[in-house]
Image (cartoon, rainbow, N blue to C red; front, side, top):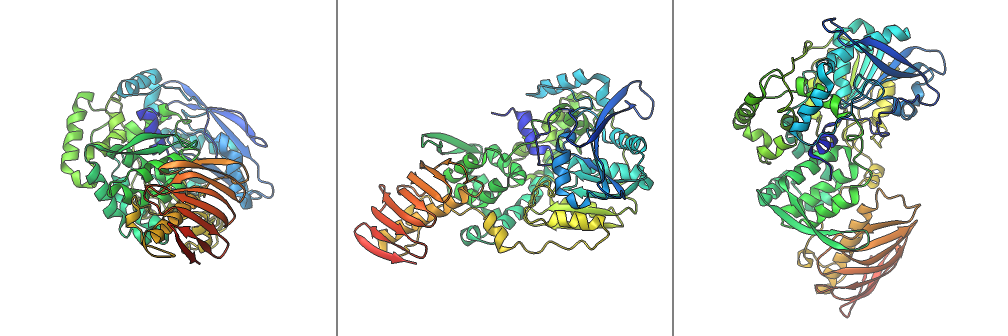
Length: 586
């Protein structure tokens, strides 16, 4: 299990989703790397220096600009992802130097390891940093960038920031507008600080669930996902719902879903596309009292989708966020006063956290962690309005930590700003948008061309990542297909099973052998176009076994609620005998 702080990092850190942001300061292949020594305090009120690691991939042709990558968190190192990101913007490689810098307190720029499990550890981490924690701020980082610009001989910088990196970019262009050629803000964090109490997430959740579900098989059965979420939270209350947790070998144990775990899954989903696609239908099942689909969804999406957070610097995350985030107290306030300040804040804004209990939302927020942070002076801010610099804002419509609603607010700060909203993307758009719209828009923007709006998602893209289907718990909830009565309902249950399996295998590398759990029982094995079902149970009391090669094969149906028999599939039809009834369907 992740610690509470590590879980928070997964939910909060806005990272470029390419490679783990390790603390390694190794120079990326093909890059020219160096160290830049900057003052610990650019105002000169405190002694000391910081050595910053950076790397440059030189333009392959005639250089016209310098493109600087500003990673998120705060806490993610940039050097480890330099080459991967350069591949994404390959059309710009001939004319731009691509620069990655590990911001102070990250990667090879003075990162400090902290083992943080609870509030006491947060205080201990601050003590470990000592006076440095006062200077691990966005404003100091912006001044670092100006020192970098001078050191590498760049006339102006073109800034690409993601999540917290956009806050750094926005601070820099306000402090140094004459040194900024343009800025691309991917999943923008407000320039006035992170959302310390998670109000933005609860604001965007109903719209995001609706957009994920529509159109497709999800919307056919889950008309209003926001209503389903409200009903699910109400059913959970202060307790939990239990359901089967099936392992890839078919072993069944019991797991439970609470309000807190549901909230954390929703907030984590904006960096986990398959989890996000399955949530609306699974939440609808939860509202009906069936926890199995949500437990199963977590099981099949828990490997490989949610990376980035724990490999980043928790010490930099806390040092910056606890003094700059929008919290119910001033960062230099006495620790003893903060609990009352938070209580008063929540009492005045209970509706902002609905449908969740405020305690659930606050428990996963910055406020919960920063309450024990030693008093620290708040750094000087910058004006809310931005300068007349070309700015492209890229927002994923399925992003929750920096939702579209917040991106529109950011757009209003720039007289020369453009907003590109990408329907199918969550957080960190450019590196996760499988439609290519964000990348195309970024390149067009920097070439001075028209940035075209992302069209409605195509049928091809829907097929690549469909919304998950609603899985009825009982065969009695299914309409008969193929034939009447129990045999028809059983055939419908088989179809539901295959639809669920198709969703589960969306992100599977079928070139390799794979094994997946069934929803309520059994398991699946496969490779290539062949898939074998080993007593899998999606609908209660309906077990399905057999092998399909492509769209053809024979399945055996059994179970306490099923009309037992066999179903034979070809590319164009299904025939068989269930409960003694012969049927044919196309």
